[in-house]
Image (cartoon, rainbow, N blue to C red; front, side, top):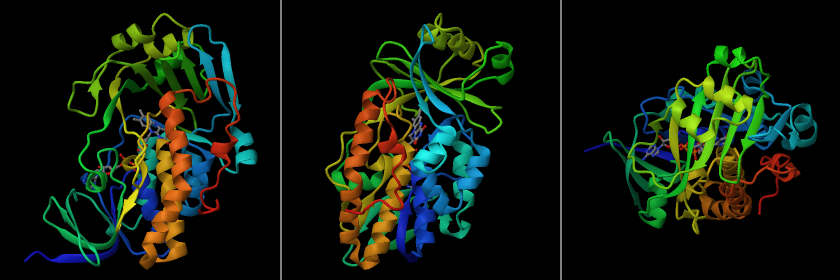
Length: 380
Ligand SMILES: Cc1cc2nc3c(=O)[nH]c(=O)nc-3n(C[C@H](O)[C@H](O)[C@H](O)COP(=O)(O)OP(=O)(O)OC[C@H]3O[C@@H](n4cnc5c(N)ncnc54)[C@H](O)[C@@H]3O)c2cc1C
C-alpha cells in the first residue's frame, strides 16, 4: 500500500507567488510543504518589475537587500509616444519611491528573482517533480495524489498553481482560460548592438502607439548590462498548443519598425525573440472552499500591462499568511474569509486596469498601488 505523508499545509506550485507564500508561512511558524511539477527552474529570458508594495514583503522574507543589489533601480517610469518620443507621463521612482512609498522599485530578470526565492527556502520542504493529479476532500483533511505516485494528506491546501490551476478546477469546474486577443513579444537584446546605436536608453520606458500597441523596455541588472523588452499587440487568434512560439526581428519590424530611432535600435539589437499569448479569466466568484484556497494567477490572472501580476500573487501570499496567523490553522474558514475580503477589491482593480492597458499612459498618482503595505494593512 502506498504510504500517505501527513502535512499541515500543502502548497501547490513554487512559482513567484507560491515561493513567496512558502517563505512567509514558514517564517510565521507554520509547517508547510511545497509541491512543484517542474523538475527544476531555468533562467528563461524575461524581466519583471517588482514594486515597493512587494519589496516590503521581501523585506520580511529577508531578500530585500539582495534583490536591490541584483536589480535595476529606474529613476522614473517613462511613457513615450512611439513615433515622436514625446513624454506622455513620467512617474518618479528611485529615491522618490523609497521615501514616498516605503521601499525600492526594481526591475530584474525573473529567473534571478525566482532563484533567490527558491534558494531561500529549506530544500527539504520543496518537492520538485510533483505534479498534482487528484484532490479528494475528506472529513478532516485533503488527500492529494501526484503523478509520481506520491500521496499526501494535508489539513489545508493552497493553490498557487497558476492560470491553469487544478485547484481552481476543483472549486469551479473545468474551464480553459480565455485567449485575450493579445500577444506579447519578449526579448533580451544584444547590448553591444544596442550601445552601437549611440543612443541613451532609459532604465524603464513604455512606448505607446495608438491604444492597441506598446513596447515596454527596461534594464534587468543593477549595472544596466542587460536590457529587455516585452510588447503588447492585438492578434485575432492563437492556434498553438505551446505556451509560446519563436518570433523574429522581421516580425518586430513589421509591427513596430519605422518609428522612433530608439524603438528602431531595439528592433535592430534583437537576436532571439519569442511570442506569448495573453490569457484571461473574469474575476472568480469563489476564492476558497472547505480546506482549499487559491492565490495569484490561479485566482486572478491578468494581462501583464501594469507589471503587477506576480506582485498581486505575492501580496496574496502575505495577506493569507497574516490571516492564518491571526486565526490559527484550525480556524481556517475565518482566515480564508478575511483573506478574500482583504484582497478581492484590490486584486480585481489591478486586474481590470491591467486588462484595459491604460496604466501610466497619462500622468496619474500611483501611490494607492505602490505605497500599500501588505504586511501591515488592515485585515477585513
Ligand atoms: C509577458 C509577461 C510579463 C509579465 N511581467 C510582470 C511584471 O513585470 N511584474 C509582475 O508582477 N508580473 C508580471 N507578469 C505576471 C506574472 O508572471 C504572473 O502573474 C505570475 O507569474 C503569477 O505567479 P503565480 O505564482 O500565481 O503563478 P505561476 O508563476 O504561473 O506559477 C505556478 C506554478 O505552479 C506550478 N504548477 C502548475 N500546475 C501544477 C500542478 N498540477 N502540480 C504542481 N505544480 C503545478 C507551475 O509549474 C508553476 O511553477 C508578467 C506576465 C507575462 C506573461
